[in-house]
Image 1 (spheres, one colour):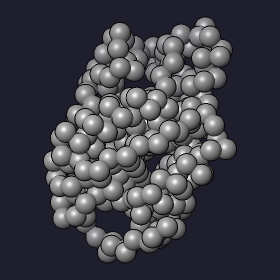
Image 2: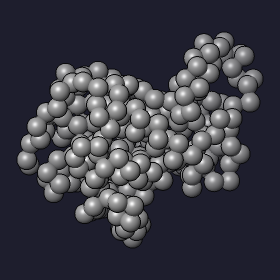
Image 3: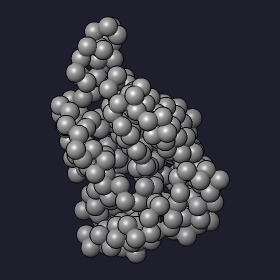
Image 4: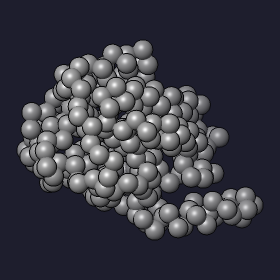
Length: 265
C-alpha cells in the first residue's frame, strides 16, 4: 500500500479543488453518499470507489458518477453484516486505489416506526446495522487512514442521535451509539492527521423515508451534500443539516423528560 504525503493542519481548500480526490463510499448506492460525490466533483477531479451489497446497483452508481465528471470509478462487493470480511475488503480497496483522501460512511437502515410494537427481528437489524456493522467499518477505515497518515471520514448520523424520540427509539439509540463512537474516535485520532466529521441531518427525503410524513425542517440529499462539502473545507467536527437544528436540539436536549415525551416528534 502506498503512503500519501501529509498535509498541514490548516483551514482546508475544498476537496477536489487542487487535485484528484480519492473517495471511498461505504454504502455505494446511498443517495446522500452519491450526492456528496457529485458535489465534490463540481469542485474538481474525483475518483470514486464504491462498496455495497448489490453489484448491479453499484455499477449503475459508478456510471452515474462518471457521467457527472468523476473518473475511473470502481466498486467491490461488501456485506456489512459479514463482520469478518470488513478488514480484508477495506484494506483491498485502499490497496487498489493507493489510499483515499475521504471515506464516507453512508450505510444504515431506518426500520419500522412502531417502537416496542415493531417486529423484534426488524429492531435487531436496525441496531446491528446502524451501530455494530457501521462501527466496525468506521474502526477499520480509521485504521487504514491512520496508517497512511492523513484523510477524513464522514459519518452520516442523524439529529435523532442527540436525543432519541419515543416514536422511533431503536433507530435513535443505534445512531446515538455510532455518533458517540465517531466523536470519541475523532478525539482519539486528532493528533494522527486523520479527521472525523459527523453529519447530523434531520428528516431527509430519500428512498429510506419514502412514505413517511416529513418532519419539520425536512431536507434533501443535495442539501446534506452541500453542507458536508462546505464543512470539509473548515475544521468542524459536527455539522447539522439544516443548521438551525443545532439550536433547536440545544433546547430539546435539556427539556425535562415529561415535557419532551409530549412533543409530536
